[in-house]
Each structure stands twice: as structure tokens, then as C-alpha cells.
Length: 174
Image (cartoon, rainbow, N blue to C red; front, top):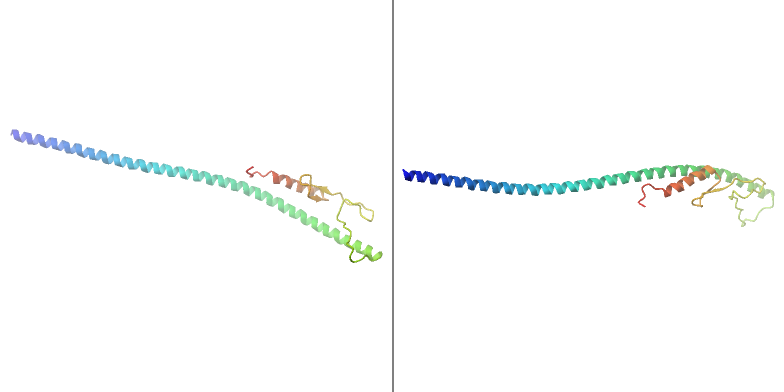
């Protein structure tokens, strides 16, 4: 009977050892699983940081493009207005030029015929008095670029506004 008690005791000890061994194996498995989860979490965190930086870069690019779009639209409106004004000027010059051409040719035919090789006098200078005694309109020059000239003050003002806008680019990196 004592032998049986010893066998039972040995069996209980062996069973306990097996339970401890199984628990150790389970703990080791949990540790390995935890390590895998940590690595996965680090990868996910790194990926999320990349996504955040990509999102910020895209947002900044969209803001920059919106600013550039506004600048281009403003430039387009200014250019369209300038084209309209220049077209009106051209029509006025054509109208004035045809009248001037008729006057000059009628004066030539009334006087002695001019030689064919002699160039016609330039009459585009609006500040010089005309030959018939009337004075011409005053020419306005852009005070910023000193290149644009117009006999119409409002057209010169529009050009001056355009010159000022070119230097005030809100999207300029400078």
C-alpha cells in the first residue's frame, strides 16, 4: 500500500511538472506572440507616420496650387482687360490712321507730287501739334515701367495697375 502511495505521489509530482512545463511553453508562446505584435505595431506606426507626412505634403501642394490658380486667374482677367483695351486702341488708331491717310493724300495731290522714294512723315507722335494748327492729345507714360504710353489716361491707369500687380505676386516664394 505504501508503494501505491509512492506511485500516486510520483504521479502527482510528474503531473505537476508537466503542468509547469506546459505553462512555461504557453508563457514562451505568449512572449513570442507579444514580440510579433510589437513588431507589427511598430510597422503600423511607421506606415501611419508616412501617411501623415504624405497627407501634409499633398495638402501643402493643394494650397500652393490654389494660390497659383488665383494668381493665374487674376493674371488672365488682367490680360483679357488689357487685350480689350488694346483692341479698342487699335480700332481708334485705325480709324484715326485712315482719316490721316486721306488727309495726307489729299494734301499731296493738291500740292506738287512728292517723290516716291521719300518716306511719309511720322504722325504717330501725339505730343507734337498737327500741321493744320490743332493740337493733339497728351500722351501719358507709365511711371513704373516707363515703356507703356497711351493718350487715354484710364488705359494708362489700367496698365499701371497691371505693372504693380506683377510685383505683388502673393504666391511668389521670394
